[in-house]
Length: 429
Figure 1 (cartoon, helix red, strand yellow):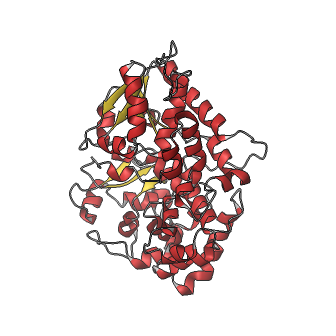
Figure 2: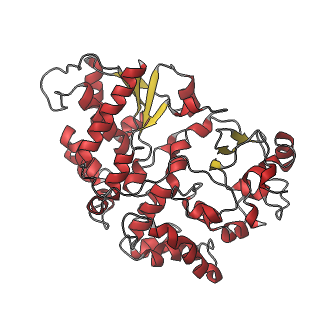
Figure 3: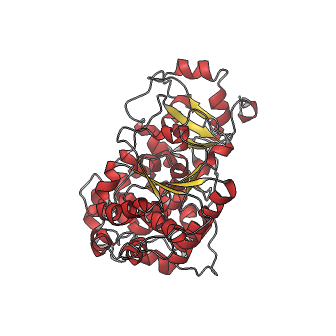
C-alpha cells in the first residue's frame, strides 16, 4: 500500500511529532511497546531523527531541505523567509513596533493583553516593550506617578514565584509599582499550575509569550561551551571553532552519526547550509541556524500540544512575541548576527542586544552585566494526561494510550494502518 491510501481522518504531514512515532510506523521494528530510548539504528539511519536526538527536540526544517530524507512526512507551517537585503531596522524599532501591533490586535478583538512573564531575558524584554506602549512616559527610576495611556487594552502580567526569584528587582521596582498604581494587573501563577489551565482562562485575553526569542539569537546549546556536558568537543574547542570540529565531532562521539556515514551526512546537510542567510562556519553559526530553521516550528507549537484537541482559532489565542518576519530579518543581517553574542568566550554576553533594550528602560546595570540565559519551559508542568505522538497539518492531535503506549492501542485508535499510510515516507521502504 502506498501514500494514496492515506486515511481521511488525519492529514498528510506532521507539524509536530514524537520521534518515537517512527519506531511504531517502521515495518522493520516489530515494536509492540515503547523502548526506553529510540533505537540507535533509527537515529543513525535517519539523519533528521539524529538531529532531533541531538537537540532533544523534534526538528522540522522550515527551508524544506532536510525534511526530504526523513522517514516521517513533515509539513512546514511557517516557511523560513529569504533574507531581505534592504532590511535596516534596529532591534529597538522592531521591538517597539511588535508591541504596538499586539496592543492594536487586542484592541481590535476587545481583549486584554496577558503576558506570561518568567523573569528571563525574552519575556522581560517583551514586557518592557508593552509597558512602553501602555505607560509611555514612565520609567522605573521615575519619581512621579505612572499614568496609563487612554483607550488601550488592559495589561495583565502573570508570574510565578520562580519568575520573581529570577528577576526580583524588576518585579519590585516595576511590576509591583505599576500594579499598585492601577496601570497593570499582576496575577500569580501557582507553582503547581499546569499549562493547560491557560486554555481554561478567560476567552477575552490575548496571551503573549517569549517563544522564538532563543531561535532569533542562538541556542540554549551554546551553553555547552561553558559548562561540561556530554558535548565534550564544544566545551573543549568553543563557539568560534569550525562546526565540523565541534558539532559533527559531538554527533560522532555520541554515536548519532556513524563514522562510515560521515561523508553522506555532510552531503545531506550541505543544501541546508547553502540556504542560510549568513555563512555557516563556526559552532555558533550552525547552532543558531539549526535552531531558527529547524526548532522554530516545535517551539511555536509546544504549548498547543498540551491541548486535548486543536482548531485553527486556538493558534490565534496565544501570540509568540518574536514570531515575526521582522525579527527573523533582523537576525539574518550579518552585523546583527555578530551582535547576538559579542564575545563568544563570555556566556553573559548572549542576547546582549535584548539586555541592552531592557537596560535602556530600567537602568539596571546588574541585570545587564550578569544575567545569564536560563530555560523557563522546564519549570512548566505538562498537564496532559495523554502521551502526544504528534500534531498533523489538519491540527489533529495524534495520540494512542493514556498511561502507556502500545501498537495495539495505535491500531485500535487508527485502524487499517492509518498513521503509517498518512505519515510514513514510503521511499524508506
